[in-house]
Image 1 (cartoon, rainbow, N blue to C red):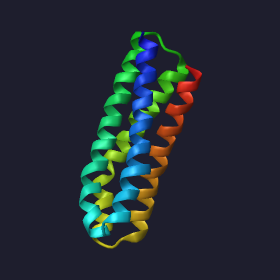
Image 2: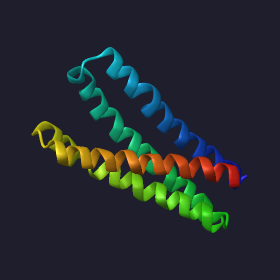
Image 3: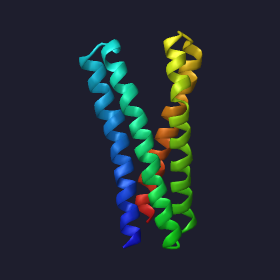
Image 4: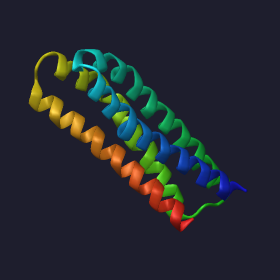
Length: 130
């Protein structure tokens, strides 16, 4: 039962990331100007990072309660830490974009993209090994 809940949580995490990054953001930039899409994305991505953080916390708690293996604990701990970092760098990322500091913006944005991809890959791989 606990293992099934963890798989469900990992699936939700992966699905949210794929939907947000693969469907919502590209559709916005295809149909709206950057000035129109920007405010929506600034509102949506903090929610993605926060929700993924909370789902990771729930999955880790289940792993600890159910004596989950090292792999599950590692995946969910990486999920929690990565999403916390992504959430916490949002103000600096937005500030760099707003002030035209393109180098800083690119580094911070790349960090959040890489961390989000790591979370996606780890959760998908974990599903297949659970």
